[in-house]
Length: 437
Image 1 (cartoon, rainbow, N blue to C red):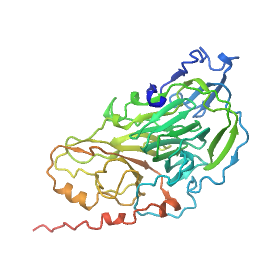
Image 2: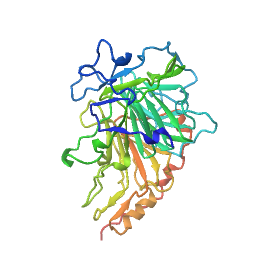
Image 3: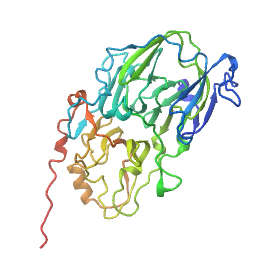
Image 4: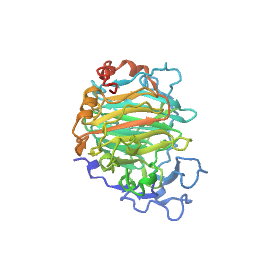
């Protein structure tokens, strides 16, 4: 049993939280943010996730009360060996409109591989410097980050563990993130990833925007991912005078700096800009009870909006277990061409529309306007099955990263781990057309 198994959390999405480590319960100032002298000799430091002048309803910032300010570190230096399979630069990648499916991404073959050592970019779009875009990555590791922390100056990380629990320490406190849970670590927040064994998963990175709950419209006040089910860490600190390696992803490149103390020395904090996790099994599914197949937007957990209303830089969508009961309806996802790009991943189980080659830990990409849909076996079965109420995706959790941006597939992803027979899933589809008599 680890201390991480006994953690308690603050609840609510986007809330104004306030938390102090129980060892120093009076760490937070009363009635102000930056007193002349903070209690216990702490330093006050603000972390801003939006412009100071952003509207109140969108403004995100937190105040941290820490043993030392984060400015104490030696100069950053470029890490040349890191990032050979990582990129945020998609401008020079040749276009490729094909359907792609990847086999489960391999776990490390050597010991001592940490989260930050083994990050691979699959695809992405937009531009990290002008701050409009996203990237989709994979990670696999088998060792915890020791006296090492990282932060992303470019954007937010939404991390989806597929295998292995992650013990994540942040400046705001600690979180245990299991498979079928996700964690969002907003831009600039320092964190370290511990593991309990071989682990892998998916990362959705967005820049120039933050994740928020989707509007519910005519659904009403309740449903989908309920705000109270999101969990934020309680304050926790360590006072360690040891050399720490601080890794920074900046403009898509990697840098590191040394400092003589732990960055996880925040004794208390308050605000609404903080990491949070969510259990996907708590999602309240909305679905048809009459006919036809609803658009996948009804399964949106979080959205990262663009400047165009109703259009997202990225949506995080899941397909959890649910009931199917539509009358006179082809129940699996329909054949489709989309002005959005769709990356699918599988956490556990067997995805309903492709029960063969799509396996947990793998992925697929259907680029903008590239056709996709059920394979031959799924179509034939669903076209002839007796339409009784049935459980769909029982024991399964799959997800989609959907984006309004066109995706460029990295050279690494085009050549590594690819299922080259993916296109054959649709080749057996038959002509059923008959002329009326």
